[in-house]
Image 1: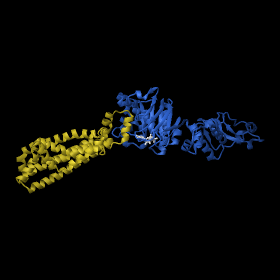
Image 2: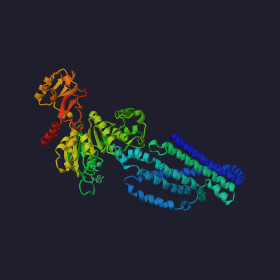
Image 3: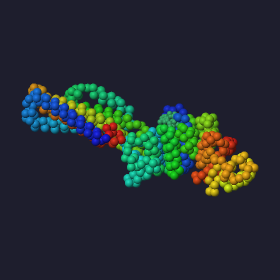
Image 4: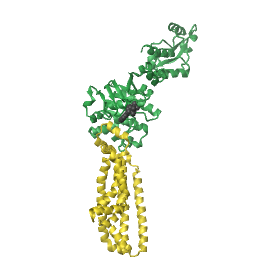
Length: 246
Length: 370
Ligand SMILES: Nc1ncnc2c1ncn2[C@@H]1O[C@H](COP(=O)(O)OP(=O)(O)O)[C@@H](O)[C@H]1O
Ligand SMILES: [Mg+2]
């Protein structure tokens, strides 16, 4: 079962990788001179890719650190009735265009990494909070009752029953959040956040196709890699009994 | 022992109490079935025992200790609890599900895992196959069994079971009920068992508590409830076939005529005839040297005839074991179109006989003065 799913995951990686490769080769043929450009820009690519990854890790990490506990808190008896309100606020927030959020973030916090991280954090928060909330709410009440009836404490019920049974949905939220995040990071360049967006936007501005692709291709590869890693984590770290993938 | 003393529960905003001044006692080692229509307060009564619901007034004792003197979480750890929806944790293996209470009580892992293995063997589920499985990989009946094992894992003296076999098909339910009764014969736990099914109650209970609208209407042995329903509500609830249901509660040995006359193969027909006349019977059982039933001789074939019994007997259409219930006995009589049956023990030794008249008499007697 598990090997099967892993194989399917690998296959997907290969297929996606292959598509990107074909695309890249075609683009390269069309805009000959890409390879030299990329080699010229190699140091920049590595530097910016690292910056790019840091932006993802920090903003998404913060979103997980805030979003999961927030989602959990909104399922506790004291805060339960605010759950829907918070979700609605976050949902309205999600309808604001990404660029507008970054612009707002910049107008609040100025130019640089901080507003970029903050903007990305806000964007990724919604799927994490809403999936945590939905995942825990979906744990059948009779499981909670059985747990209470056997003398588990509220804390034990959260850690041993509610979270494990909601884990798949929470992971799915984090996976969605990462996908949004990785795809949005290039825009962070616009408010001074750095990352591979710098190559893409400079390439467009200077009408240098090679430079643009030198930013776009690693960005695409990164998105695929991150999704693959999340998929593998989802596959391996969630117990078989509650893992639809196994 | 579980004792409820004038216990009442009024849920906030409810017009009438869900449980109304209930006083009852479940004696040590007995199964008490709380029986009644849906919404009559059975579950609420049970949940007040482990304080999942706090009583509005009244006291509940386990042994001689007031449940209010316990920390609720610790109280629950000391009482087994089974619910209709089973509630196995899908994220845990069968082994870990069974060991939930031992684990929170901090038992040594080797000890608790050995216990899980032993429990699985008790219900004939191969530990090698099932310990590492997840609940979703089990059938409904298997999950139900694990639900019960989980409740008894830490060996609590008291079990609370809320319609524990309610979610399975009738055939598997009967099997699990029998299996559970066998376990209970060894465990001797004090059990409060909720059911809405009179047949299940009659089968499982040492005592039945009949509830209606939060009140305890009648609390007695199954036989007495069926024989003497206290009022219209109880007699309607137990059903118009309550006398037939009583047949299940009584054993062949209860209605059997003991020390019956019998003849041996080598006896003469004259001996047989005089024995029958003496007892006013029109047939007599023939046994071999070890006392096993071999057949019977009819009076019409023996009176005034010469010869040995062994050469003039007829074969019996059937016999019945003394441990069978009377329902089986009556059904056997109807099937073979006879009005009496020879009763034998497990070694087929002749023990006595039951007659249809004797059974009718027994049921009528209990109605009059039981
Ligand atoms: N948590 C609760 N809050 C309010 N009313 C309840 C609650 N639990 C049960 N009740 C009410 O109490 C009555 C008895 O319920 P219950 O004990 O579950 O009945 P039973 O188990 O006999 O079907 C019902 O009228 C039910 O609606
Ligand atoms: Mg109920």
